[in-house]
Amino acid sequence: MIFYKIKKIFSVLFSKKIDGKYKILRILGLKITLRNWSHYDRLLMDCAEKVSFFERAFRENLHACSSFDVRRNSVLVIEANNVHGAVVPGYVRYFLDLGYNVDVFLRPKVYDSAPMCRLKNDKIRVMALPITMLRQLFESGQGLNEYKKIFFTSHFIYEWLDNGASPTIFNHFPALKKYLAKLTVVEHHFERIDAELLRQDKVITLADFNGENERSVSVVPASFGDVRVTPKSAGSPVIFIVVGEISEKHRNYSLLINTVWKLHQKGITNFMITIIGRGELDDIPKEIKRYFNIKGSVDFPTLYEAMEDADFFLPLLDPQNHHHRRYLTTGISGSFLLVYGFRKPCLIQETFAVKYGLSGENSLVHHSGKDFIKVMTRAIDMSQAEYASLQTGLERLTRGIYARSLETLKRILGDGNVLSCID
Image (cartoon, rainbow, N blue to C red):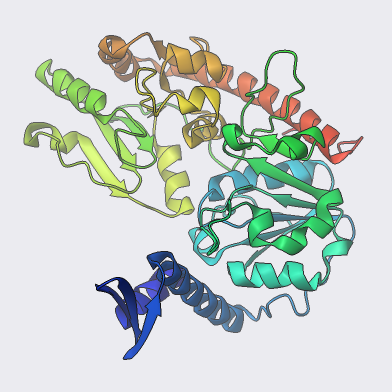
């Protein structure tokens, strides 16, 4: 990946250390004093982004939007973070179904990870822009008035500003306020939702966190493009998949390891666990390491292939873990987007199952950690016919989510007609 290679080079050329109360950055022998390390991290990121962008511009004959013509009836979709790439194809799909042309601007790191690789359409154009160039774009206003809508897939940007301001898109791009009339933002943190944007119907969430009598702002990006909905493996080990950061804060890995150990002791061996995500899983007993295939961080093409190869998804959420309870009240786990998008039956604790529309018709639901070994055993032994029935239930659930989300997005955008139907 271009971005990662260049960032590694810059991390070698740049060094940092503390000298008394000062923070010293050395760049090719030049010494610069900084107030805090966030300046260094931002400089490193900006340099890597700019160099990777211009290398790509030269190679692909892209010219930093200088000759970028906005097509009629277009929306601009922007992910200004170096994360959240997984939600982009789902939101682009909605705009396609509303009849728009879609231009997508991504940070170079997300662009290189290729979240849009399965969503191909002549109405879509995808470009990489460093955050500094996004800022310049809004300051210049070049072509922005020609877009029908401007859609940010993140409200907060996870890079603090020098003045310590709350890092929303409006803090990073002050000129953006000029385009508020055509702006919609996605809020990933419901506890930090902007009340004024909510009042103006300019904010959406990835799941429904409003009260029963409040208007829904949920638009779930549960589509990844052209994916294969695959049947259960026949005559080979059953593959379970876990996706996301490897930590107890995000997933109950202790439960998984203990359950695999118990299955091994019972002589149940025809299964594998694929794990995708950053982090280390060091405490796996050597006797059961052969059941784990830890791939680490991967790009989206690799992730999508692994999802198609897997049989069951493991969210590994525990309602007793206060970190996990966020996925019941203020945020959604990307695990559920993958479950919906790939029609992949999951093994899910019942509290989270209720929240996300999952039940015995489309998933394997367990009450507590003590029941987890039962649902894993059932998954391993499940017939292809029963598995297909669960996928049919997931198909029905996902189509309903899509239809409701599309109606919500139409209301927020002020669009009256859908120009293409749900596949």
